[in-house]
Image (cartoon, rainbow, N blue to C red; front, top):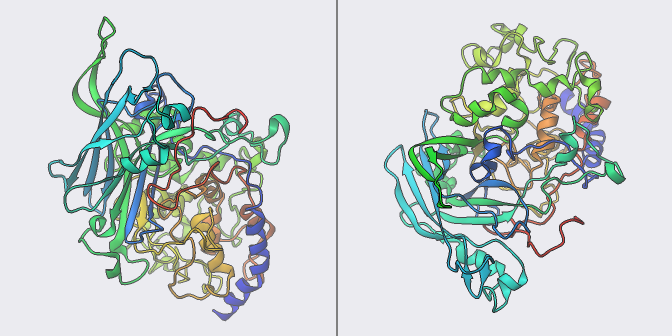
Amino acid sequence: MKKSTKLVLGASCVLATALTLSYVDTQNSLLQASSHREAPLISNDPLADNTDLYAFRSPDDTNKVTIIANYVPMELPQGGPNYYSFGTNIRYEIHIENNGTTGDDITYRFTFNKVNQDTTTFFDIRLGQENNKTTYIAEKSVNGGAFTTIVGSGIVPPPNIGPRSISTPVGLNTTYPALVAAAIANATGTGGEKIFCGPIDDPFFADLGGIFDLGQTRAGGTGTNTPRDGVGHKNVHTIALQIPISTLQKNGLAVSSATNILDSRFIIGVWASASRPATRTLNTGGSNPTDAGTYVQVSRIGMPLTNEAIIPIGSKDVWNSRTPYNEIAYHETYFCNPELGLYMDDSQFGTAIPALSALRTQSNSLQAYDFRNGKPGLFPLKGTAAVAGTALDNAAFGNYLLRANSPRSVDLLPIFHTGVPNLKPYQLASGKAGNPLAAGKPFINNFLPLFGDMLRLNMAVPVTQRNDPNFSSEGLLAAAVLGLTNPTYTNINMQFIPNMDGFPNGRRLEDDVTRIELQAVGGVVLAAIGLWYDDYTAGGPNPVTPKLGAVLGYSTGVQYNDTTFKANFPYAQNPWSGYANHSGQ
């Protein structure tokens, strides 16, 4: 153990430098990691399209968790005269799983209604009146029971059209912050929820134009090659809830009851969906369509990136129709051999996308293990004494995590499909003395014993305050770096490391999920637990090799949102004004 600690500490300067370099470029990007227009059918139904899902402990009220589900992608702030809105005859739902058994334990349902207050004008707002004025009903179901109303007539703020429409007597004669504040509702009942529904700045960020041009990332480019945030200066519609942890915890316990910061009793899974009636009839004479029949799920989201870059186009619509509780089993194979892995392997198509050249999945880790698509990974260890007492033991989860010709079943599959347990080998390499299967430093536990795509959060993990000098958009990867390099954390004890509350343990608004997930496909999580990159010789003095440095220094370009976040609920920033300049972003 002393030898391992010495190796890690000796590497700290190199690794810390690599991490610092990876934060330098803040103006570029790579891959769409949210659900903006992610499947063929839902791309034609934007009002029902999930874009992103977030779940995090509230930084200003740490006894609560905030869940943010966004819909309606790519809203142009100036997109009048009929501005974007929630849809009617759509069930927007946020689903909570907290006990590891199949089926929602808590479901929040939202339905919206719109009225025109002044049909004599084409303006959306005029003389204190609103057209497309939107209200909502919020309902809640617990343990599959009947839905009960918790907000009977919620207010949705209007679009932020411009200063005359919002702030002058010829408009609403108020301010947009005042409209947002008035729209925050306290739910009735015993749950203690706070709710906001309305337009916001889209908190996601990515160079969509570059990545969808066959992966032509433009990090560091100039002129036409300058990276652009594809959702910069665009809005979405959000359903935001702030919920006491005791309401979400399976036994109603407050977070103060947690036995430690990775207490498995406080893990929840979150996913969001939208459903429409099965039948729509178009009517003559300009009247609204008639909807009828049972509701059919048309969109869903749990982990970001799943339906975009994991599920192939022929299965995307099927994916949206399923729930985490009835996913088709073969979907698991997409995590075990992800398509993106082919572009991080020079024996496959690695040279086809030069932008990913820094990300090369381990093919000879510790001179023994190959994690490239279709390769053995750790499967040769299945059923052997080497994995006894670990999560890879057949008596534990070995039959799920160790699969023939499925190398990423050991890391990407649990990250996306079950959560990661606080068991060997899923602990940091600190203290492992060179054996990746040994016990190391705990740093994650968001495992729920069921299989399905959900955003998993351990609510017992403390909050990293946004003004903490160690706060990082790299989320849990930043925590791993600190746990491997910072003398405060390079022991094997369970202790809070800043950013343990970041993605993929939940998802904060600031987390750069695009970059984190690309680094993960590139094998960085394997390296964190001691399965180092190919240019490290097992037993050598320094596992922080150039290949590891390249992965940690990898930049997606656009690494931050194009505006700030609020310090208080709903945290997402007010929507962009249609009157502002958006072409010069």
